[in-house]
Every structure is written in C-alpha cells, then in structure tokens.
Amino acid sequence: METKKKYTGKINIIHKRYTIAFVYAGIRQYADFYENDNDNGILTRPTLSVNYGRDLKLPAFPEKCTINDVLTLIREHIDKRAVIDLINGMPADYYHNRELRELVDGFKIRLEKFKEEEIFLFFQKAIQPILKENKWFVSSSHIGMPVLAEQDENGEWDNISDKNKEFQLEYICYAFIQSIEPNAKFESKNQYSSSRADAFSYLIGYIPLTYLQENDLYYKNE
Image (tube, rainbow, N blue to C red; front, side, top):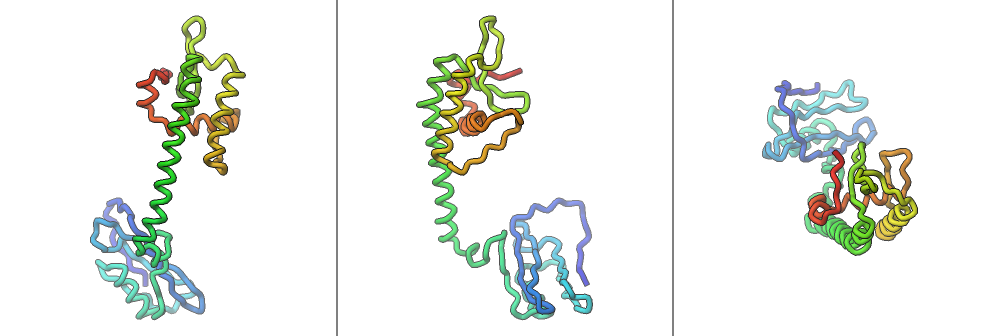
C-alpha cells in the first residue's frame, strides 16, 4: 500500500534528494525521497512503489519519518541489503566526504573566479580603449542581447556604421574567449547572429553594468 499525506497547499522547497537502492524480483530498483533542510530531517510526503511488487505488502511510513526510518522499513520488508545510494545525485560516500567535496568544489570556484578576473582585465586593457577611441557604447537589443551602439552625425543612436572595425572587435572577443574556454558554445538568441557577436555578448555578461555606467560606456536604449 502506498502511503500519502494530505496536500495542504504548501509548496515544499526540496534541499536534499535521497536515492535508496534495493533489489526486488531479482532487479535492482531505486526510490527517491525528499527532505527540506528546515524540517529537521523529516521527509516530505515519502512514498514508495516497487516494480513487479503487485503481491508485495509495502511498508507504511510513519506520519513523520527520516531517511533512516525509511531505510530501516525497506530493509525489513523488501531487501535487507538496501542502501542509500545517492544524495542529490552524488554517491552517498562522496556527499558525506566534506574534505573531498571542498577540494573539488573549491577548484571550480577558484577557476571561475580566475576566469572572471581575466575577462574583466581583458575588457579593461583591450576592449575598453577601442570603445573609447571609436565613441562606441554597450547597449541592449530588443531581445536583451548586449550590442554596440553609436551616435550618427545627427546625434541619433544607431548600430555601428563601420562594419570592418566592428568585425575586428568581435573577432578579438571571440579569439580571447576561445583561448580561455576552448569548448565554449555560444547559444545565440538571434538566428542572424554570428559566433563572433555571441562571443562579444558572452564577454560583456561578465562586466558589471555599474562599471560600464561609471566609465561612460553604456547607453540605455529606451
């Protein structure tokens, strides 16, 4: 029998997903259980279904139970060798190995921080002087993509008129991004955009808007 709790209309925010592995009818099966960090280890509406278990009497979970309660019941009724296999998609042993996780996650954090710093420095040293020299500004297109804009001889804002210079700037951005992230894939929102233009948008995404505004490099397209 599958146990269910009455739905109260409350939206539960899931912070932890446990995957219990067990064997029934000669087949390794899995069941997920969810926990909200604010509920002191109490699972959120735990339920269990088993393939090929039509004649199996499923355990009835208590009103308030933890993952260890569930594991104990599954071991008693289905498979005494059942284990918590995954936590949030990670092997349970790895999840609980804080030192190892900090090494792995720490590297990713340091690498991302390094990339952010290098992109910002590249913008300052290579792109910003080009924008200033040509009186170009970073703006936003009607679909939210970063674009370049300039004022024409009548003071009207428009796209860049010198396409050769614009091409060179976009290529510089593309070459730089490819050098620090060779596998970067640029997913354009505009079917007519090129990888070079997408690389420019990618790079600008790392530059704080406040920096562009404070250095007179941003035009807000009304």
